[in-house]
Image 1 (cartoon, rainbow, N blue to C red):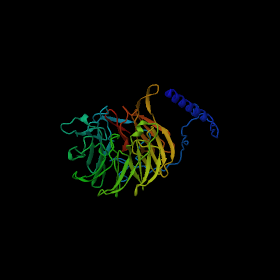
Image 2: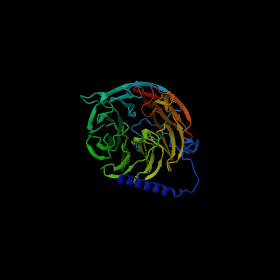
Image 3: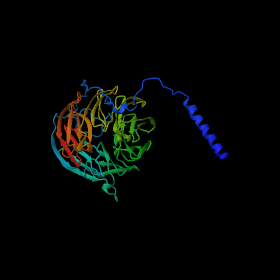
Image 4: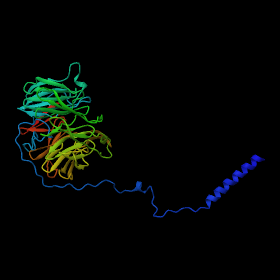
Length: 443
């Protein structure tokens, strides 16, 4: 009886509690009722609308008759700001320089031109010299003993005063006699050496694969000094070439870090971190700096793979502006404009002072083999200013030239097998390496 009484008592209390709760009125929130699912049915576009392309006047440097192209455009002292070139160059000759691109190896070294020779590096560490008439002169294999050419890939080239400096994926920086290909010295980097070297004064500067910046004596190959950055494994093959002035050497690393050191002694002056990424692209997770730092006046222009192009103050490293673009190769600075190829395969013109976009032109993106499937995204290399036009070499098999004022396509020339390097211009000739391992000359 006691158990039944307790059970009944508990039931009564519960019922009383429920009835008591029902006595409280529902709280009505003030305001207009909205359907939370309405946004899913909306047909209104959420895409950010960019301003229309503008054909603003451009101030280009004077055209220069240059016989040589010794290294990249980042360093003002050796940069060819505006090379001479005919409006419609056509293929003059093609010569094999070694192994082309494959699943295990890539050509990453832009050719350099000096003393009537064109120097190249294939995907398996073979250095070749070719005359400007297309005749093979010499070749030197830089694969170490007990290694195979397929074991590593990548590297870069720079030339100065009769010596060719070659970095390779085998972790070596090698100095070769430019006339014969004979080795002068070799320095181990203790990591992959796929970064492109820069020569200035009595030193060679480069970034090794472990995020270390090196300064190496040109005459002996001895290490003068080193600097370190935050390690990062999510890198694009081939580190950017350092940019150098009389005072500073600027290094760009895979972590998105830019460091400026005093050129002679290596004391760090400043460092900057390039942050931010383009939403909606998985490749934007790779924050590597793919647009080599370029010094122009008192500013440094540098771009990342993840969708940012940034201007920094050369003296302090302070950020001047940030554009939601990128630079897949070294940006090209001309007058008050910066030209680059971004991560969406667009040729872009920005105001160098403010970073404002002036125009962007879509480049071929990918081959469509099935609906909504991207089989292969095309690579575009450049731009390079020559003959009053912007040159872009592409893996889809074309060398295109664009109007710097409006971005309009002016000419298109066939490149057999497509490009795998940026074009360089010397002696009124465009030189570019194809994916099949051929040096192409267009005049």
